[in-house]
Length: 214
Ligand code: E4P
Image (cartoon, rainbow, N blue to C red):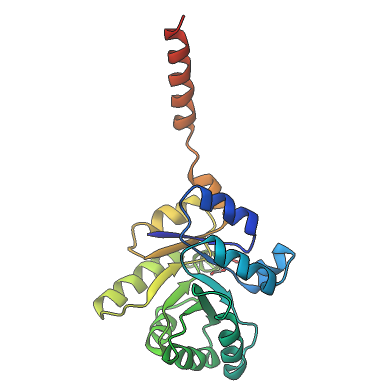
């Protein structure tokens, strides 16, 4: 499972790129707003930082507008992927963009039916949202698992990005689903490295080494 960062904060991305763990990045209009900068400012910087795909989301909700935005966004860098909402106009845009060789990430996916439609329209990636499904009492991880299983069953090559990840449990559970990618917010990525036995073990190693020098 590849790790993407789910943020538009360039400093945070740079920190984890230095760890060697970040392959790609996903953004959305809310994350861009949270960064306090514009999409035009942050996307080129993010695209330079990571080798893998960088999802930039369209603002338009109509096919023509989405396609127009997408054609401009992909000029920023070779690794730009166009994030498109899972609505009828979005599917039409995915069909056009995929015929032009432009990669798309269909977002706001909450069911297997939506995932299948996105894949058949030509999406390169689909993003089922785990946390938001859990919020309404459904099982987000189960949806990811089901989509991965169904795509495999039918030889669908669209990659599955586990999105809306809220905690470590989500990360560890999606690791077992076979999904190709998890897009992880900074706060959760920071938690992934932490284990009390690592800190305790390291303190003991250092203490034993110091004592051996006496
Ligand atoms: C996915 O690409 C979205 O940017 C993101 O995962 C949404 O997460 P949220 O439900 O925590 O806002």
